[in-house]
Image (cartoon, rainbow, N blue to C red; front, side, top):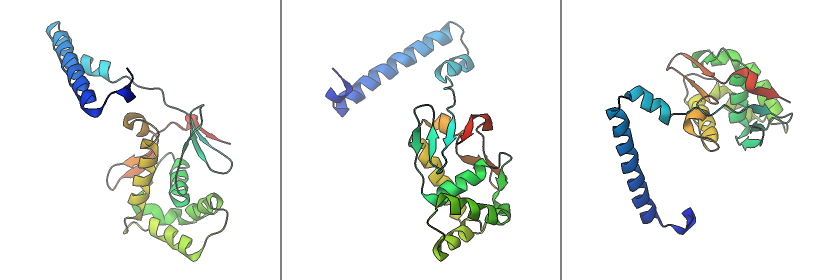
Length: 177
């Protein structure tokens, strides 16, 4: 029997049985002296991070299988801006990066920058507006669409409120074609 042959109620029953078994096994490990931290480390195995490839036409791919991470042009331009600054950027300093973002956006969007596109750049670099947060949320979602949450957090923009925002992925894993 395959997963497609099982309806949702049956799946839920199987999940419940497996969860009960896992909890019993965890309890046994505790009884034998294994600490909570040791058990947690068993459950959280780290997957190796995939290389991130930026193609000549600014398509974003993950790993050797080249799984594409899809983003609309302005979102992609914001991502590439942050990828180009491993030290990170404080959102309140975004106006200082307007010219650089405009250049990146014009390369990602080769059919030219309309007045509307230029206004979008103004908005995303205006720290008083929410546009940058919306773009970061879209970047996060793009990575979560192609990988698990624990791994994805290395690839998207994050940081403390009011502090430096950056992409934590080692630049050794980033390939610019």
